[in-house]
Length: 294
Ligand code: NAP
Image 1 (cartoon, helix red, strand yellow):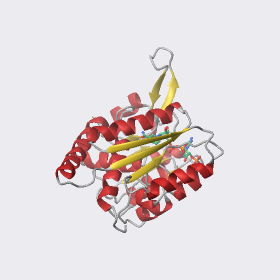
Image 2 (cartoon, rainbow, N blue to C red):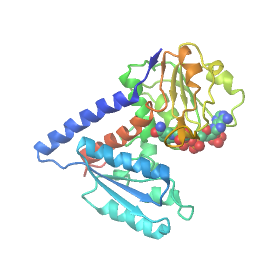
Image 3 (cartoon, rainbow, N blue to C red):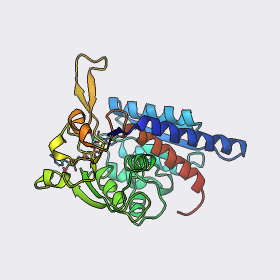
């Protein structure tokens, strides 16, 4: 069994990005510039955005953080998005979710110029992904594809079971694994809360990708011997003995499942570090494609 070290892979890819940035600097080309929009004071969102800005600095990108109180109206936020769409300095931007209930996440997402949609959540990006055209891929599924690639895990012809069908993880993941593309070509089953006899499905998986948000849901008797297990789940479980007052739990019962696997991602340190790395890769793609129709 081999543990997939997402931190190591993320560092290695970020080093490559830093080299490209330093080459761009010396060649007098534009330095990639990512903007992040943060509304309100949600603890999780603050941490994610802070980490994204820090990652930009690490690789030499420019970054701008725009903060707004949760009293901002949808119209005001749409104006912010439009300003970012029009600003030639900004290559890509993200609007950190969740947004206050008074604002439609769908309308905000639709307002983002697809050429700057480095989160890859816009319908244009998702449509191009489906059609196997060059585009921004949603960060977490993209990160998982890079992990599989880095560890040279064979995917072609394999049976892949994806657990969870969210728009940002499970559904795009299932499409990427099924595409006729390098390190994909799997036969994919997408499962969700209405799936009957879930265990019969998961036991078929050569590659099992779990994105439920249910701590330690996947037990050893649900996993085939020799499977590759990718755990996307990150749930803060209260633990008074820890300095932060919680521990981060994945969706897989790691201790019990790991001995059966050929490869497995830990939580933390597996998929998580790759999500930000994908955002950086998408921002680099944005600056490289700047001005071109794609
Ligand atoms: P989500 O939107 O809450 O979706 C959860 C999915 O799990 C839904 O499709 C749901 O089915 C399915 N599900 C729930 N209970 C189930 C059950 N008993 N059996 C089978 N399927 C079940 O979640 P998400 O946004 O994809 O996130 C999933 C987890 O990944 C969370 O812990 C999140 O924090 C984590 N995450 C991590 C990263 C990272 O960078 N590491 C990034 C994104 C998300 P229905 O559709 O039928 O309701």
